[in-house]
Image (cartoon, rainbow, N blue to C red; front, side, top):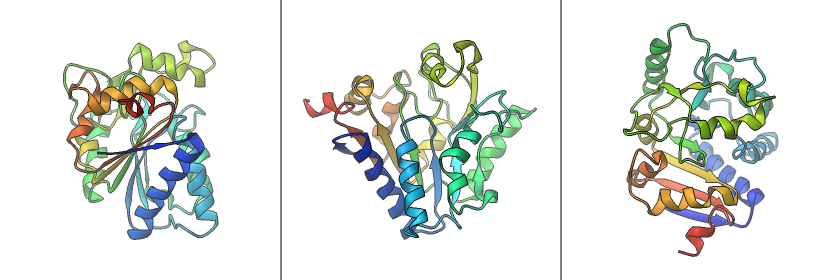
Length: 244
């Protein structure tokens, strides 16, 4: 596990985008696992810039998103499909056929989850998985639990997650209470993992992820077992590690 502490969010975004760009240049047919939320927005802006400057090429890149809200149409402005279109996909030369995001409106959720796993398997697995981390230690929408959920599945969102995500909605009542998420085993099968964290409110969670015991009560702690994890944090999120 490599830990990189940078000065601020801007530097975090540049560092993360450079790592992703390096993966794409080394393997122009890379399979990327992508995350949503506020943390990767700066990284996506940097990737868009590099694509515009012909530094990186998305034409043969395939992507799989970590999760999608259950019950939201993909064109809803709070869906993660909408998020990805407006923060990355609409601005780069990616083939729409190579974009994969769970269908939150699928009639048969069990079939949707199994189908998503099959698509990842058929693509040869994920070469680089980008992650954020929730204040409760969730990765994807794998919430604290008594066990690690293995594969893509339907999740009941924690109250803490619903509160955190309510800032994107008109009211907390509008926040979906369920989501489809890649499971821990799916994430851990990625060849490389890149986790980003920004802000003082993430400092204790980051510390526990790196130095705490491995437990499903803090899902991100399982990353201690992965052979190739890079964690990039700004000084605020890394403050407890820095002083350890």
